[in-house]
Image (cartoon, rainbow, N blue to C red; front, side, top):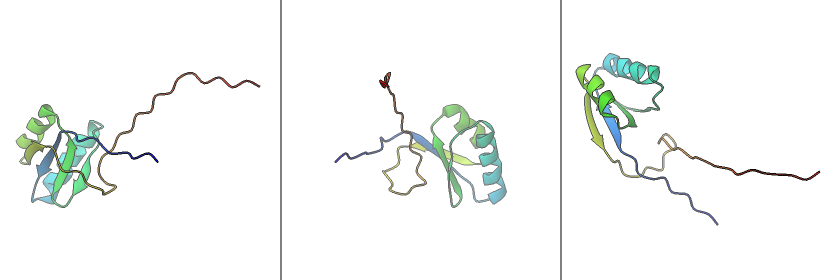
Length: 90
Protein backbone atom coordinates (compact mmCIF):
# COMPACT_ATOMS: atom_id res chain seq x y z
CA UNK A 1 0.00 0.00 0.00
CA UNK A 2 1.25 3.48 -0.87
CA UNK A 3 -0.04 6.62 0.84
CA UNK A 4 0.29 9.97 -0.92
CA UNK A 5 0.15 13.14 1.11
CA UNK A 6 0.27 16.60 -0.44
CA UNK A 7 3.01 18.93 0.75
CA UNK A 8 2.05 22.22 2.38
CA UNK A 9 2.76 25.12 0.04
CA UNK A 10 2.78 28.83 0.69
CA UNK A 11 -0.35 30.31 -0.84
CA UNK A 12 -2.00 33.70 -0.93
CA UNK A 13 -5.71 34.29 -0.53
CA UNK A 14 -7.39 37.34 -2.05
CA UNK A 15 -10.69 38.46 -0.54
CA UNK A 16 -13.31 40.77 -2.05
CA UNK A 17 -16.94 41.38 -1.17
CA UNK A 18 -17.69 42.71 -4.64
CA UNK A 19 -18.05 39.83 -7.15
CA UNK A 20 -16.95 42.10 -10.01
CA UNK A 21 -13.62 42.80 -8.25
CA UNK A 22 -13.16 39.09 -7.61
CA UNK A 23 -13.92 38.29 -11.25
CA UNK A 24 -11.44 40.93 -12.40
CA UNK A 25 -8.76 39.48 -10.08
CA UNK A 26 -9.46 35.95 -11.39
CA UNK A 27 -9.13 37.25 -14.95
CA UNK A 28 -5.75 38.85 -14.23
CA UNK A 29 -4.46 35.68 -12.56
CA UNK A 30 -5.74 33.49 -15.39
CA UNK A 31 -4.17 35.81 -17.93
CA UNK A 32 -0.82 34.99 -16.28
CA UNK A 33 -1.59 31.23 -16.38
CA UNK A 34 -1.79 30.98 -12.58
CA UNK A 35 -3.65 28.03 -11.05
CA UNK A 36 -6.46 29.47 -8.92
CA UNK A 37 -8.77 27.90 -6.36
CA UNK A 38 -12.07 29.79 -6.24
CA UNK A 39 -14.21 30.07 -3.14
CA UNK A 40 -17.08 32.18 -1.88
CA UNK A 41 -15.66 35.75 -1.92
CA UNK A 42 -12.02 34.57 -2.21
CA UNK A 43 -9.35 33.31 -4.61
CA UNK A 44 -6.31 31.23 -3.62
CA UNK A 45 -3.09 30.84 -5.60
CA UNK A 46 0.54 29.92 -4.98
CA UNK A 47 2.19 32.78 -3.12
CA UNK A 48 3.93 35.40 -5.23
CA UNK A 49 4.61 38.84 -3.77
CA UNK A 50 4.22 40.51 -7.19
CA UNK A 51 0.73 39.03 -7.63
CA UNK A 52 -0.16 40.02 -4.04
CA UNK A 53 0.87 43.60 -4.78
CA UNK A 54 -1.10 43.63 -8.04
CA UNK A 55 -4.30 42.38 -6.37
CA UNK A 56 -3.90 44.66 -3.34
CA UNK A 57 -3.80 47.59 -5.76
CA UNK A 58 -7.07 46.40 -7.33
CA UNK A 59 -9.00 46.72 -4.03
CA UNK A 60 -8.70 43.04 -3.07
CA UNK A 61 -7.28 42.19 0.35
CA UNK A 62 -4.48 39.59 0.02
CA UNK A 63 -2.85 37.63 2.79
CA UNK A 64 -0.11 35.01 2.38
CA UNK A 65 -0.36 31.87 4.54
CA UNK A 66 0.06 28.13 4.72
CA UNK A 67 -3.42 26.59 4.82
CA UNK A 68 -4.21 23.42 6.68
CA UNK A 69 -4.50 20.33 4.56
CA UNK A 70 -7.88 20.00 2.88
CA UNK A 71 -9.30 16.76 1.46
CA UNK A 72 -11.46 18.63 -1.05
CA UNK A 73 -10.58 17.96 -4.70
CA UNK A 74 -10.53 21.71 -5.44
CA UNK A 75 -7.24 22.01 -3.57
CA UNK A 76 -4.35 22.58 -5.96
CA UNK A 77 -2.15 19.49 -6.19
CA UNK A 78 0.89 19.03 -8.37
CA UNK A 79 2.41 15.64 -9.02
CA UNK A 80 5.69 15.41 -10.88
CA UNK A 81 6.64 12.02 -12.24
CA UNK A 82 10.12 11.52 -13.59
CA UNK A 83 10.83 8.43 -15.65
CA UNK A 84 14.08 6.95 -16.78
CA UNK A 85 14.79 5.37 -20.10
CA UNK A 86 12.58 2.39 -20.73
CA UNK A 87 13.71 -0.26 -23.19
CA UNK A 88 11.37 -2.99 -24.32
CA UNK A 89 12.86 -5.85 -26.25
CA UNK A 90 10.76 -7.18 -29.16
